[in-house]
Image 1 (cartoon, rainbow, N blue to C red):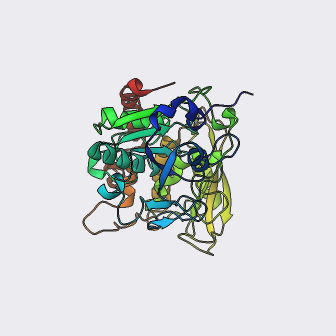
Image 2 (image 1 turned 120 degrees about the horizontal axis):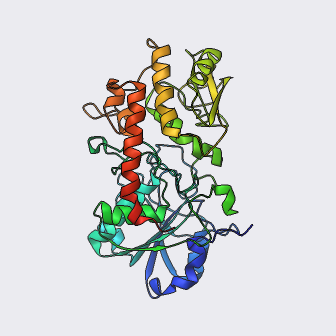
Image 3 (image 1 turned 90 degrees about the vertical axis):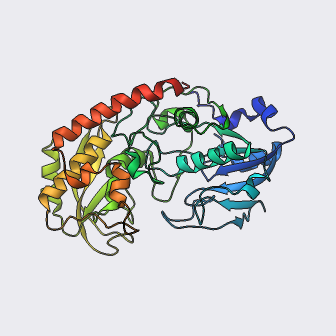
Amino acid sequence: MSKTVLGIERLDEFMNLFEGKRVGLITNPTGIDSNFKSSIDILREKVNLVALFSPEHGVRASIQAGQHLETYIDSETGIVVHSLYGKTRHPSEEIMNSLDVMTIDIQDAGSRYYTFIYTMAYCMEACAKYGKKFVVFDRPNPINGEACEGNILDLKYRSFVGYYEMPQRHGMTIGELAKLFNEEYGIGCDLEVIPMLKWTRDMDFEATGLPWVLPSPNFPTINTAYAYNATCLFEGTNVEEGRGTTTPFELFGAPYMNSEELARKLNSLNLEGVYFRPQWFTPTFSKYPKTLCGGVFMHITDRKKFKAVKTSFAIVETIRDMYPDDFKINKPYVEGRPCMFEFESGCDYMIKRTYKLEELYEILERDSAKFEKIRKPYLLY
């Protein structure tokens, strides 16, 4: 099998972008080539790498979800790491003046919820503001580049888990997203995408021949990436989305649930490409540490047929019907602002239960088709 050639592996072909320039890099442990060499080391050997930038979870992916971090010195390289997930998520004028080119090499998850793509967007905005070049070393969408699915975000619920009018599953590479953000959504920076070779839109990540590295602590496998768009919505509720277990996002439940009853009900919906197996579990941390939870394991039996967001909405509505006195949507972190459930669902009609399930399915179909047209001019492969 011929391996996909990553953007970072084509550095020599694009050295004109970096010669005589001070370079910054946004990355984490997923920034490696096909032989496991760090993009930090690749750039240090060939360009003047003067700064690193840390998204959520840190450059070494050692920080749990939502935990802020501050600027520090990377112990491996001695290079300053500027935090983009602390007091500010935008690089300052002082930082930008120390650079000529900002780059990114990071593995995205293929989801609107995933914060790395908005770290990229904020840095692109800074490049536009301060007249710097932005370069993306492109990488595969791990859940393929064909399918896109979901409801388009209402900008009333704009946040760091959903910043642009796009569905949950966008079906684009990080380089294609950069082009979309830059042109469709008006960032307007000096952008260059270094594309991959030998990648096609129908590829699951396994087909690329590339090594999988956890992009964040609760993303252990490719299966996690497929499950993520189906169960991430539970982050804003009192349902445990599997954090504190070895299979986050594939497993979900709560102490008030009956595993067998829930599995039977979900399987009766006849959702394509998925089977729900009853499973009891005890998380080590997160919402119910050391507490027995009833729940189900979500087996994705056919990736091509599986519709993650349709499944997500179906699971949420089913649990609300089965456990009306127990299921709760978490309150906002800041009084007067939308709650996490609204930020992640990207709408108010889910929390208000404005529509029946079949009507929600129709919204997903309509919005998915709309985004297919929006994204088309920005596809590179």
